Image 1 (cartoon, rainbow, N blue to C red):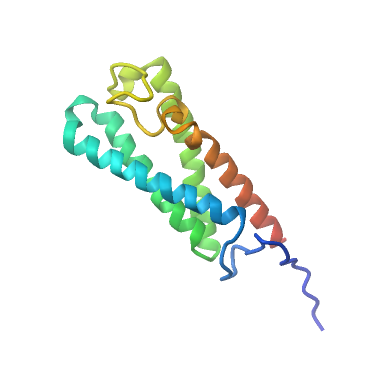
Image 2: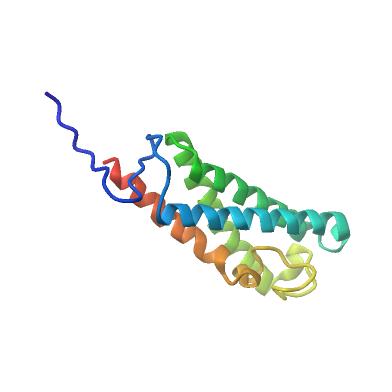
Length: 157
């Protein structure tokens, strides 16, 4: 007789391989990712259509951020180990993007084809000045996402 050593109690006990729906903190995380996906998509589409020539690198990065948020949202919702790995990859890429773009927007905005580092300016991106224009949510969210993913993984051990 085999004994199951996995613990599946608690509101966020959905394991990477299970088909259980996400609840609690995970649900809130997914909602915030979804909102950022919509916001970043709208922003990047508008920037690219309206004024791409002003800051093509920055606006391309806005579109990349939107894509990252869309894929991360889907990966956090979808069940299975593959999507768990995709979530880790996109959220890790997001954190790296926020750190790199945030730093460049402060110390060398010209590298991003920006004229200044105003996080609320015409040429800013979601990740400019570490997401200051979005209340630093783009900086904090991947850390929270990685923490949540690590706890989900621990449930399967």
